[in-house]
Image (cartoon, rainbow, N blue to C red; front, side, top):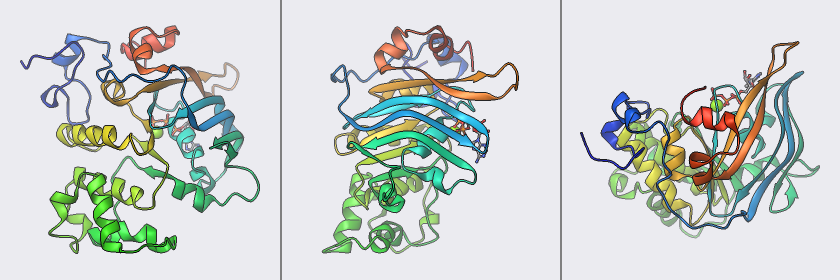
Length: 302
Ligand SMILES: Nc1ncnc2c1ncn2[C@@H]1O[C@H](COP(=O)(O)OP(=O)(O)OP(=O)(O)O)[C@@H](O)[C@H]1O
Ligand SMILES: [Mg+2]
């Protein structure tokens, strides 16, 4: 067995979907925060949810979430399936506008401006606050055109598209692997490369914030670690919010972590997502304030 610190996960100690193997789980049930970055106790909020509710028709999926997202930090959203993580994430860049029946109330501030105020252009919102999805979703185009697409359709003033494409691919740590085949189809790349291409495509339109919804769930452990390294590099330039089911991943990459759960209405049986606790990742994983967080991170629930 490879020697690890308690809770540390090596590529051979996770299953294909990134979950710890029985062997690694036996080392410790409690994920250990492994990146010891010094950050302020309170975040400098680039974005902030204030009393956010999200409904699908009459169904209240997420209730009363207030949460800041710190500048140049990685914030992880964790919690059991169905507690509204993706729903909340989509409310951060008005992606829910595109979902039938979805309605957001409360406020989402971006540099102090309410993204849901009248007159705010949702297309511009999605340029400034980009999103990377669970499954890599390159366009059926060349590698080059995948990156150039966003700047072209948004009419960005670009001196040299070649330079822009190269820069985006370099930032996404993909340039060396694709520089000789830029005109080839993006579909010819591996899953992990495709996900880095999608990150490059997001970066190409110069966002401030990158939202990631389980970006590694379809990747193998090596590609997963590559994306995690990339996130740590990108944090200096962008603010990142990541939804993950992989506790070890949250413990490895996130500066702060928000734990959500779903409360069941006894009368109707419907489940509404709530924010239980938000704090420095080290605090959430080592000394959570709420019993529900403790139960979840140690695998007793969810
Ligand atoms: N388009 C939709 N229409 C109606 N209900 C939806 C829609 N999308 C999500 N929901 C419901 O909202 C609740 C929260 O779903 P959501 O997908 O946000 O959870 P999640 O925490 O991301 O779950 P998972 O971890 O499984 O991805 C669930 O009850 C889900 O069934
Ligand atoms: Mg989800």
